[in-house]
Length: 347
Image (cartoon, rainbow, N blue to C red; front, top):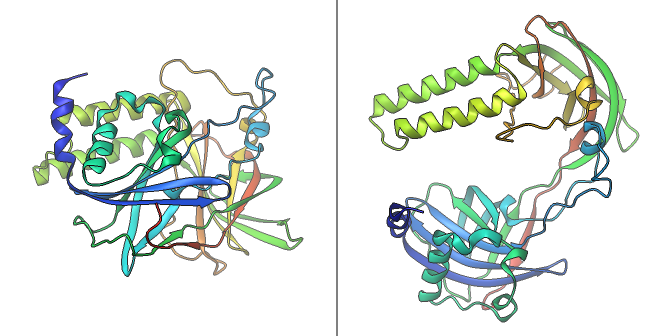
């Protein structure tokens, strides 16, 4: 712990706005604390926290396939909201983060935020006063293109737009990919319909070369602007963290597999290498960081006139690889956005 850490806290926000609304949904309680203004406009919500469930077969090694096929957690979180409306004021959510309050007894930023909210009039509801922090998490949402606090009174209703939650469907369709070649295949979806997938492009991605290019570009932009947002020391630490994570999953000189495809239904397909699905997880020493990659095609539509989508198979292969035994393990079906209405004056 350094005193400089404490010096940064007062500058994070200049003003706070108390909202203090409790939401009850699906036998769970959530509480919207309020907002803060500073370099960014942020909104804070306390919600239930559950430790990830550990499989009953935790003592028995599982192949990647079996681990991936385990049911996904479906608990709704306000982290996935796209818009908050305070009365007639629309606040578009740019992004956010969520973390358990379990270890926040030593997190002075969180405690300082709670104390500032209380000084501004936040009254902790009775149901929340004696709740153990182990059972709660704090969601912090960043509002896009806005820094000033909106006007708000307790009688204003709130409207919250939740992003669609995609539904996962298991397929387990085996296929062989060939670098530089296109191919088509079909599968049956959960409705019984025949779905065509057209793989337009299979390439090998040198992730180390891409990472080095990104860092060089970032360094050049920093020098051109004279920006002090990222210091040379911070940039060095970020690079070390990134390269350390890459070393564990894709050693230098190896590649990942990139795919561009079209689908006759609006599904997001998830492919894996066969050897990965049939292998057991490896234990790594040091950092267990994972870098998740997405491939965004340059074109909107593919050769069949359908939306072009991308997928990265994050299994390391040698740069002379031509054929890759793979599998369409599952696809995601788009959900529908939904709105939640909260009346005024509740707490």
